[in-house]
Amino acid sequence: MKNIVITALSIAAISLTSCSTTQKTASVQSPQTLKEGFKNHFYVGAAINLDAIHNNDKKAVAIIENQFNSIVAENCMKSMFLQPKEGEFFFDDADQFVAFGQKNKMFIIGHCLVWHSQAPDWFFTDKEGKNVSAEVLKQRMKKHITTVVSRYKGKIHGWDVVNEAIMEDGSYRKSKFYEILGEEFIPLAFQYAHEADPNAELYYNDYNEWHKGKVETVVKLIADLKSRGIRIDGMGLQTHVGLDYPTIEEYEKAIIAYTNAGVKVSSTELDISALPSPHKISSNIADTQAYEKELNPYTSGLSETATTKWEKRYMDFFSLFLKHKDKVKRVTQWGVTDIDSWKNDFPIKGRTDYPLLFDRKYQTKPIVKKLIQLAEEKKN
Ligand code: G3I
Image 1 (cartoon, rainbow, N blue to C red):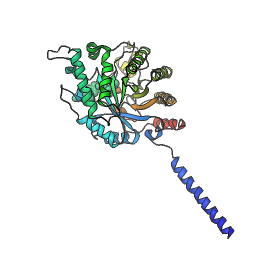
Image 2: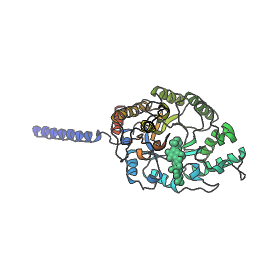
Image 3: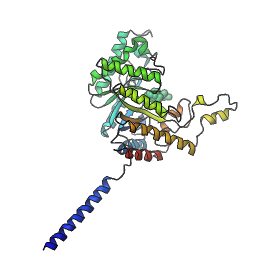
Image 4: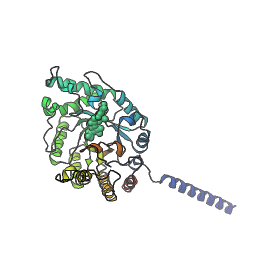
């Protein structure tokens, strides 16, 4: 009898062990997508265009749904599209964008409430085409921000409230907002956004964000908003970078400076150009064809050497974000596949660039697996 009991117990123990081994095998299967890989670190997102928003580009939609857990609209929430004429709002595209994010339970970002570019002319002028008074511009800003933010209250989780207002040397951009309202347009925009949705996160967003002068002024701005009790949650680092600028060291310094001011950072528009900067190429090449070839060298595919360099840059940036993951809320790509990237047209029109993680045929680039592995290594 004793033997039977021991045998039965042994069988039970063996089957329990094998059962837990099976479960363990299932649970340790390595993550296959960016959102699984980075889920313990930060959100991974993408900017999406109208073709994806309206489900016309189904392959892009599949990538977005599988790989990302955050989205931002590449264009359709800019003021010239949301309020093309005074008092006439157009929300069809933005509503669809938000519905897409909600359906997929994503962290949804609104981009952007106040930006000198892509703002309709009427915003700043009266019937005679002259600048409006400070009071009128304040009213227009308040109406725009309140209408847009309240519509998506509780649905959009974070807003790029002000975009690109500070120059690299630390001075304020001489935009219409600045010309008419002075520096005060920034605190006002944050205040109006907060009043419209007190739970939404609010960000200042900019490019060339590692430049010393810009860092200093933005840090002062954050301190000023905080000292006045005005909500600001984050600094949006656009991260439009290249193979040889900026250095990782200067980028890290900027992350530390911004977060020391009391906000989180997000990489909000990440893309890494694989092409040479035009100003680094000698403009006195007499042969035009040779010059063009030098500016746009990879029209039929990125060379192996360039791919290796480009992959290393992605690894270096993600290593940095992981090193500071306590400070980083989100890393968002500006686009989904290379074919739709704005970098093909900037700073020169019509080049063939390779800045994103998915290629022109909607294939996942090999770097994605390496990034996921990196995230796994930094899990604890
Ligand atoms: O909507 C019009 C369409 O009616 C017209 O037929 C067509 C003809 O060119 O243009 C369309 O507008 C274009 C718009 O994108 C929407 O597709 C503009 O010409 C084009 O200049 C605009 O470019 C966008 C740019 O911002 C300016 O708003 C890029 O797609 C977008 O990637 C870029 O994104 C910015 C961020 O918002 C802020 N940070 C920098 C980043 C890159 O420039």
